[in-house]
Image (cartoon, rainbow, N blue to C red; front, top):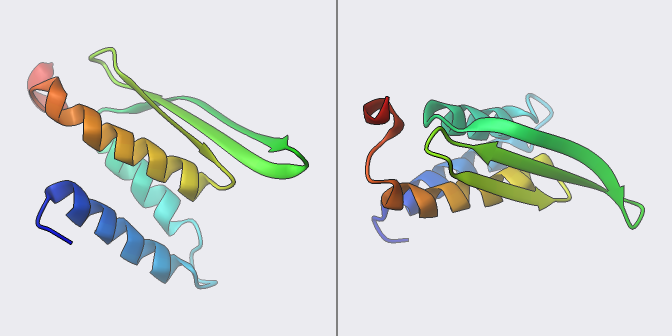
Length: 103
């Protein structure tokens, strides 16, 4: 892994996910991902759990005050939120400034 801050953050989440695979707190990673997104001014617009082909599936859509959106879907909240985080990391450098300096 290189020193790209985005890779460092995703590696941190991956380690948290590995630790969460214990019966102690399986929601740790979802909460960490949600907390990280909210701390950057991303808000949940839609979260939907449903069946697709008989299998559980989930969809998350986040919006930002700048008018941007990021979505993710998969067979678990963790998988869908990981897509959202990856998209946010791709969008944020194009936003020009962090949320705290926009408003």
